[in-house]
Length: 293
Image (cartoon, rainbow, N blue to C red; front, side, top):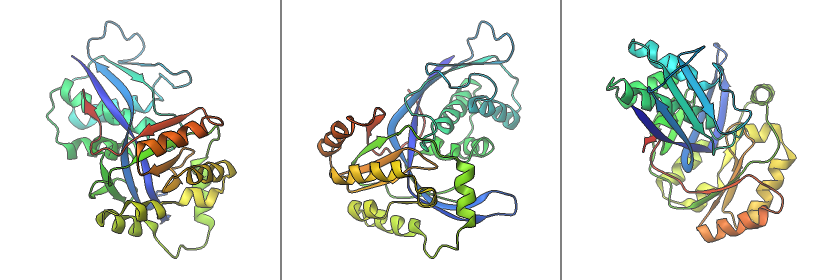
């Protein structure tokens, strides 16, 4: 059996770091949104030969690891442990459209796609909740990538509550050639004084009120706030100058997204920004996570 899975990117409408736990993880509160920018992950058990491993990973983008260090292999191992099924030789091909090291869950969504496909290939009939449980052992964003939509995430980011869908809008994502160290960002967040506000609460309130303008004006990311990266600030200013309702860095960065009332305004901003940036993506909010196509 060969299955093709659409694996969507995510953005963070809010990201509040509430503190470090005794186990080393961080408590967070954030609103996550799936968007129509997809990797295509093809999973098959029709494998002629896997010489050194029972998983053969291929990818169309140079620099993406195709050995055991790829998160999709971790997803396969976690699936086997959870289900205790007899292992098969599996091939996983990743057609990469989501930029890496961007805070868009590009690796996590590929892992989520693999769990979804393996459930069908092995006919294990797992529920969404059970697949999310496997995902929790793979990466904090993996459960969200399985379910998608608009979610409030708490705990270490794996406890999710459903929110009303984000009001119809268009989103422009820009990935600059700058990298962000997640470890360093957490370190800076840990060393600051206690926060006096939680932006997520405001974002959630305005999502329930279906007020896109208010949501857009409340976008917030603690990583962006503590890292103070000039390029991120410049991109946000450029988006706001070109009719974005709001703009923010996603996840641990370095991608920045802007929310627009319509596609025409988003496309016009993209044209303007293409003079300076290569990696620009137009997309919309979606209600799903990974989907077999």
